[in-house]
Length: 183
Ligand SMILES: O=c1ccn([C@H]2C[C@H](O)[C@@H](COP(=O)(O)OP(=O)(O)OP(=O)(O)O)O2)c(=O)[nH]1
Ligand SMILES: [Mg+2]
Image (cartoon, rainbow, N blue to C red; front, side, top):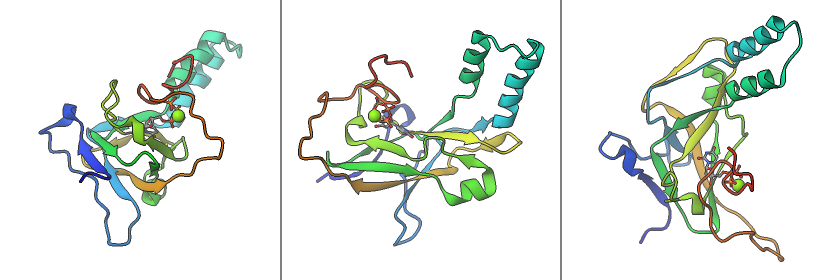
């Protein structure tokens, strides 16, 4: 019987994606790895672009410059090629690995990632888990396919006496339940 677990999303089938594992008997987190090779640019460099625009515009920041720099500064999404299923009253919490901050200057800007049970197999991206990251080091960070990037911890969550969800299902993720739907 299926209760909770991980699966490879169909986009990455037969691409050698391994299912997340715990490293030791008493490790809480299942380590999630990057599904691709990619470069995470340094936020300093990105901020430099913003400052450069400021100077170029004679210290007058136009609305479009704000918009552009905000776009540039969006966190990078690292695909994992993995989806997680679990009972409705559970959630998979994505947490950073301590070694990411100590060795790689890599932060999860959302603090923790919340992977809802109903994200699994959603019609937009099949429930693929993405790890939001920011590289606060000064150099670009090269990530290789298979590098462990975050850890996922399954936990049960509680509901209030007057619990009344707005909708019965989710469409996708990263702002899908937002009325403006812009994420
Ligand atoms: O680091 C993350 C955080 C979230 N998600 C996916 C799973 C989660 O179920 C969905 C929605 O996340 P969340 O509820 O944190 O974002 P939101 O901004 O509230 O979006 P939504 O309106 O879709 O709930 O996005 C990830 O893949 N990685
Ligand atoms: Mg949400």
